[in-house]
Image 1 (cartoon, rainbow, N blue to C red):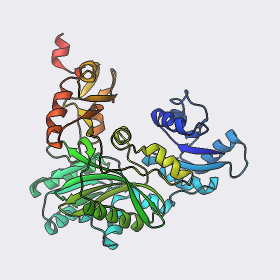
Image 2 (tube, one colour):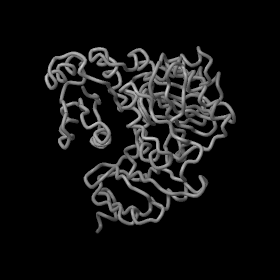
Image 3 (cartoon, helix red, strand yellow):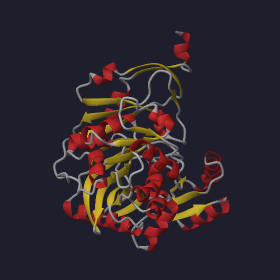
Image 4 (cartoon, rainbow, N blue to C red):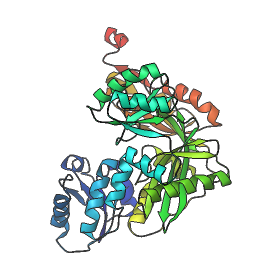
Length: 405
């Protein structure tokens, strides 16, 4: 009897395997080809729950209740996990809750209906709808997709005169799909993981984001660091998160939430029915001892996760080091960066032969590396990011100076 993990990365598969050696990894053929170092990898068509079940049964034999639990860390495959769980006879988030959490417009409506604070939001199909929303809600405005991860195509518009052009850019970028218009709320951007069970919630992670300034864009995360929030306000945050999850139909599990803290009022931005990813697991493990991957597997197996002490986090931050140039990487050297005394560990995001792209569609395309660093005061993070970024020796094929050399 095994834990089933849907579409893990090679890194996540290794982390799962350290704690659960008999875990099975259900993956697309393309992803399975990257997991050749692991046993228990099952390649299947993950667009079809029946085909995924057939792949599992072909590997394990068609006996019922051979599976102890199911988990998934990839947003695009959460719906498959929701459909697959009853076929395996294991608990998981209900498909309705998964689908609602993945539709940011419907989620915002559910929160507003439940009187959970969230910025005013409207689904926009045409320019007239955008103009009507802007007339009712003063700017700035955030325009963003209804269902994409991270900060893909998230635009911040300061002036009403710029809204028509932004509308056209977003419609082109999203290939005509409707998008959300949202009032911009000024405040601290807080990201968290929490566990919900029996209607009660407990925090697992509470981190703050330093957002890189970029004209016309929002949500470029330069750094994550442990959020220092007084205990009473922490309870306010947690209660808002709990009510937000219940409004989406979540009954039990780990939920990731992004919110804006405007003085003493948290405004929900989005929730995902998985723990936070990217560079957060390493930050949490080193700063508070919380291991998101272990916790998600524990919950999948019917266990209560280990709850960390968030009151005295280590002074560590996870940084995104981004380029301002686009092009194909000819050479990249992280040696001087790794030697910097503030750097604890480094994870390259792009290597020679990869393409860097600075555009609205995805800020991941411009991240050179993530690194875990020691720091003294959040106010020093912007200068530290710049200092460390300059230590990466980058040569692009489109770099005129590189061409001359």
